[in-house]
Amino acid sequence: MNSIKRTFNELFKYPSAVAGLIIILLLIALSIYTLIALPYDRAISLWRGESKDWYASPKYAMPAWINSFRKNKLPTTIILKTDDPSVVKTEEKATVIYEMPFVFTADAFPSEINVFFKSTYTSSPPFVGLSIITPDEREIKLGNFKVERSLAYYLSQDQKLVKKYKDIPIQEALLMQPDSKPRKPLKGTYKLIIEGVTFDEGSTVSAEAVFYGKVSGIAGTDHKRRDLSIALLWGTPIALMFGLVAAVGTSLTQLIISAISTWFGGWIDVLIQRITNVNMVLPFLPILIMIGTFYSRSIFVILTCVILLSIFGAGILTYRAMFMQIKESPYIEASRSYGASNSRIIFKYMVPRLIPMLIPGFVSLIPSYVFLESSLAILGLGDPTIPTWGKVIDESYNSGALFNGYYYWVLEPSFLLVVTGLAFAVVGYALDRVFNPRLRGQ
Image (cartoon, rainbow, N blue to C red; front, side, top):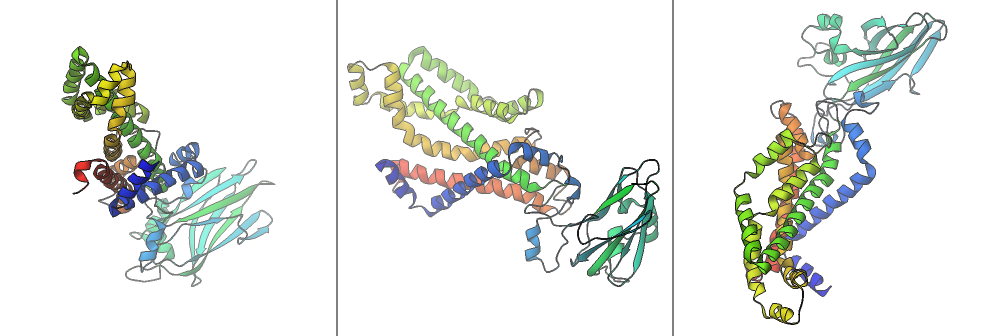
C-alpha cells in the first residue's frame, strides 16, 4: 500500500498526468453509464432503425447545442399528432377536421415536411385534404388523396406542389415571408388543417405531421436518421475494452514468454527467438485485413488475432535483455540453492521484478490498439453489429460529410479518439518517469 501511495504521489507531480487520469476516469464513468442507461440490445435496435419513431428524426441534423453559439437559430423538429390535447377536432357526420397549431420561431427553414396517415375502414378508404394557415392568415392548399390503412405523404415529392413553386423547395415555399429576397421564414403561429371524409360507419383517420429540424440531440444525426450519440456512447466502452484487453494481454504474455525463454535457455530460447524474428517481419495490418475480409469481422475474432500476432513482438527482446541480468542476481542463485522450482523462480522472483516496467508499457499501448480498431473500421472491416467511433468516421466519409459541410459527423468521433489517445499517452509517459530511475531526474 505504501508503494502504491508513493507511486501516486510521484504521479501527481505531473499536471499532464493528472489531466490524463481525470479524462480516463471520465471515460470509464461514461462507459459505465452507457452500459446501464443504454443496454446493448436497445442500442443495437436504435442504431438499426428498429424503433417505432425513427422516422421522426431528421437527416443530417447538427447537434442542438450549436444554436447556443449561433445568432441565426436553426429549427428543431416539430411533431404534430391528431391526438395531442392542443389539437382542435371537429366532427360533422362523415367529416372530421383537425386543426393542428404550432409555433415557428427559427431563423432557417425545416429540412423537410412529411405527414403520416393511418386509417380504419370496411370497404372504402377515407379521403383527406391538407392545408396550412400562415401567421398572416394566408391559406395554402396542399394535397388531396385516399388513405388506405397507412400512407406517408412527402410534400417535397408532390408533383403538383413542385410544379407550382418551381425552383423553391416546398418547405421554404410554405413557411417563407411573401416576396422576401433572400428567402426568410415567417415567424409566428401556423395551423395545419387536415380534413378527412369517411364513407363507412366506424371508419377513422389519424395523422402525424413532422417538420424536420436542422439540429437534433447532443450529437446530431446521420444520413439514416440515426442519433450519433448512440455510436459515440457505445464506442467508449468498446474502445476501452479493445485497447485494455489487447495491451494487457500482449504485455503480460510477452513478459511471461521472455522469462521462460531466459530461464530455460537452450533450444527453448532459440525457438522463441526464431518465432519472434519471423513474426516481426510479418505484415501485421495486411494479415488483419485478410482475416476481416475472408474470415470474420467480429470484434472478438479481430481482438484475438491482434493479441496472437502481437505476442511474439519486439517486447520479447526487450524483456529478455532485462531478464538476463535478473537471472544472474544473487537472490536467484539463493533460490536455486534451497531447491525452488522453475515455476516458482519464474513467477515469484523474476516476473514481479519487471512489473513496474510493464505498467507504463501497457498504458502507452492502449491508445495504439484503440486507433487500430478504429482504423480497421474506417477500412470497412469493423464489426457490422456494433456501433463504434471508427464506423461513424467510415460512414461519414462514404457519405461525403466533409464535402457537404457535415463536419460534426467527422469531428465528434475523431475528437474522442484523439482525447482518449492523448490521455493514455501522457499517463503512460508520466508512469515511465516514475518507475524508470534513469528518467526521474529529467
